[in-house]
Image 1 (spheres, rainbow over the protein chains, first blue to last red):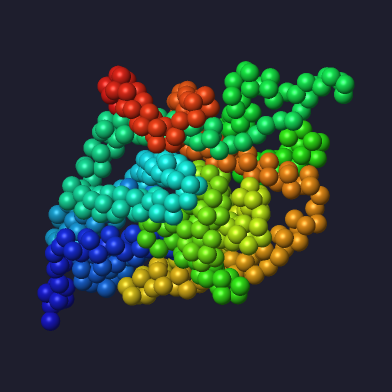
Image 2: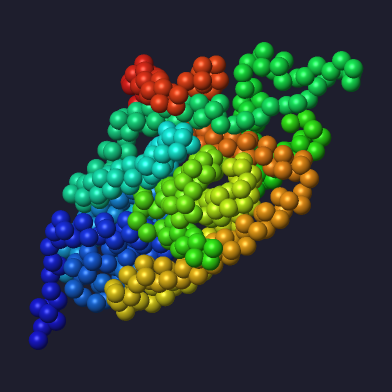
Amino acid sequence: MNEEIVKAQPEKLTKADITKSWIRWFAYAEVSNNFERLQALAFCGAMTGILQKLYKDKADLAAALKRHLAMYNTEGNWGCIINGISIALEEKAASQIHKEEDEEEEVGEDAIVSVKTGLMGPVAGIGDTIDFGTMRPILMGIFIPFAMAGSAFCALLPVIIQSIYTIVFGYGLYQKGYTAGRQSILEILQSGRIQTVITSASVLGMFMMGALSASYVKLTTTLTIGTAMKAIPVQPLIDQLAPRLLPLLVVMGIYIFLIKVGPKYIRIVTFLLVVSLVGAALGII
Amino acid sequence: MIMNAILMGLLYYFATCRVWYGFSQVIRHPLSLAPIIGLIFGNMEIALITGATLEMMYLGSIAPGGNIPADEALAACVAIPIAIQANVSPEIAVAVAVPVGLLGVLLDQFRRTFFTVLVHIADKAAEQADIAKIRRLAFLYPLLLAFPLRFIPAFVGNVFGVDAISAFMDAVPYWVTHGLTVAGNILPALGFALTIVIIGKRKLLPFFITGFFVVAYSGISIIGIAIFGFCVALIYTHFLPNNGQED
């Protein structure tokens, strides 16, 4: 029997295949996250159904699986578009694999890997900023006061809202990435509308963080100046200047430390604990 | 007592097993876990207040490259039960949560170091084109391996945490309790500052100051603030050249 005839052609991908791959990606994305290759195993796992349909030759399938085990890391929701594009590229690569040698190969292994590694950084930047830098803190910020007032339902609203948003968005981007291909992501990334959305969300986020800081960061001083006979408390003097100035200074101080020194989380919390304890021992706060 | 500790171990595992993107990034937060913990311990009021207070500290807790700065889920699963049972204020619970949250980071680092093994096994499975095995390595095996890692710390923390904190609070002088309360009151500042850094646009800082003093002077409700903030955001982008697209 002729070897060439045995090798079956790739099956056609349906919308359901893309959906199944998306479900795997959303379920797997962070489960196997590790220091060596981060989300690589999740990406490969999400591609398994697709690759199985595209590569009927065991050696081709093995090669395809291996290239998707390369280091990968992005924001999983906006990153869906990369999965969609990768599927489109694999489909193209699979259709070319058994053609005549002299035909020019458009989509090689290098192309697929370089598209993934090229896009994962910028997409993570956008996704992290929108989903976790602004959306999650704003949702939490809005519902924290209601939870404080005793509403269990409102405490659950952020997780409900963000889950619905990511499902709608992630699914849409997965399908869009597949149908529209590589060009689409460049258009989306460079379109002004995304920048407008990010800027608006950033302004709202900044405004909300200021409001919440004023509501929930509490610090007053019991410090007095002058002699024991004629002690003048300091706090009323500060209040005359502007209300809640000490909490503002604390937030700004931490902000400046984060900018100048970096995200040294342990150092900051240790410092705050020690200062609070020393201040309390001295009786000035 | 033991039953509740088992439930908390299971809850911590559920919150940190990371199944389903988008959901798992929010369910692990104290505000989302608080109603569930309130239900388990039959004290919704304290659970919600403590959860909301904890949430502020972890508001900007984003994981760049997957590295979490603090484990807010472990902090919630240990500190909220302590607040309910040891009868301490939410501020004290926040101060207790700090070291617990940092301990949780070590668990996550262990998990992600250990899971490197899985990807090496996957390399061999890929050579064999063993698709079923790759799926198990990406989902089932890490879920099984994470169970003891997550269950045991939360369980132990709940079995011994309440008595330990009660004994500690009884033993220390007033200034320590007061100092921890002060710390609990200023630690939310960390969450807010971190969020500003993540938003990452220094020239937008005036909006932070505006939001701060609108509340400091007027005491307006948070819904009022959200309405103002939303309009301010739209006005700002509207008047930027090219609708803010060049920003």
